[in-house]
Image (cartoon, rainbow, N blue to C red; front, side):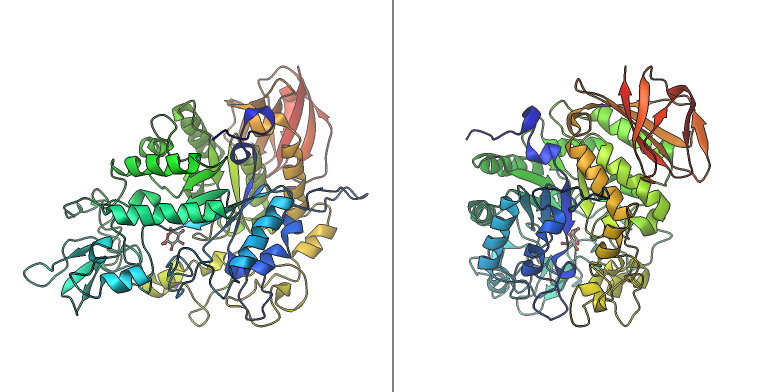
Length: 552
Ligand code: GLC
């Protein structure tokens, strides 16, 4: 089918900015302390009102993002808060129903946005009818839909694999006397992707949502769906076996046989063929591998994922040289058809502003929205939300229960902070996770009124990016300014180029940028200067980032 393209021949998933919503935590309209789809619908204008008006004070009415990605909203016992799916083609009553979902799709599209949903093919819930059948007897027709193996002669699990959430990756089913595989919770049994019917069933799921107007999928741990056919023992990870507790069975091992197998690419090509039968759909994958393996997920001929998520910047120390190296290395390795993308925050990590610090998070915002490629922004990071205060009493995340309070992911999942009303107006009742203690100060309403707030920085950057071809489709090259404190790069385009200069340190920094042009600062991360500057003597304040317009 013919592809729809937007300006400059690029697709929406190339020029656009993705915003991740964790539905439980965005807005509760049903009054149960848990966010829902209606809550997303009622706040779509916050994300993109379709007009992005500028007030007389210069503040913008809307963020101006291009696509939303929803973490799972499917029927689920919520053992892993929706990443344990009990029905892939419905909506959990907690969040609404299919007709609410249809309205959401409609309202998203009306505003010119796209909708991406989470797709969890590696494992289902143990309550999914498929697994209920599969575990009912060794001869059930769905037995082979999951990964079942006999115990070893001494009764122990079939191999040494560990679960990412601690403990062994196998649970014995007493009734049928076999173990089943789960690399997450025991409530998340892994599907057998070597079984043709499993593949067909999941392809039908994709069709179901694409027929409903869904524009893209974020495919959960997609590189894990195939395992070694012989389920061989993984080798010991000699670097980390000393430090890790026994409970952390997963990271004590190398992951040679349980993920990232070459054969997974055959299935990804089939996924892509299916997506390509529809108009301009996008496949995004959660893949964490080292650069050479990660790049393979674009496919040898660009025939697999459109965007294998790039998390590489998330694990780096806050250091200009390290960031530049990571981006340059990736840019150099990308095949011509590979479109870059960057993720700085998600529902699986600490808050960006807590990891980096608030002043640094402003620089990170500019970085994310000015690098070449598709940025994914995590809800609340546009306010600079910090980690929630999680105690053993209010902890919810199963990873925290199993691996300790320091490993809980609840810190980054606290309710969206809308205004100064009780519970930050996320809900009228006590929310499922505590509202951030700073919500009276840090919320959408207050930050909308403050012309230099983090929120207004994001709005300005997004607006500027939308109107600047150099940023959404220009080339990228880093510039050597002979300083380790700053990361400087050029985004070049025939319609006008831009330089981005980011000071990663708490020191003032003056540098000579090797670029022969007249220059003018268009945006500073402090939102307080737009002025002509000399590139041979460019001056940045501590933690200041600037977008510079150049005229050569
Ligand atoms: C992915 C999700 C994470 C979930 C896990 C198991 O990594 O991002 O939240 O717990 O998969 O589905």
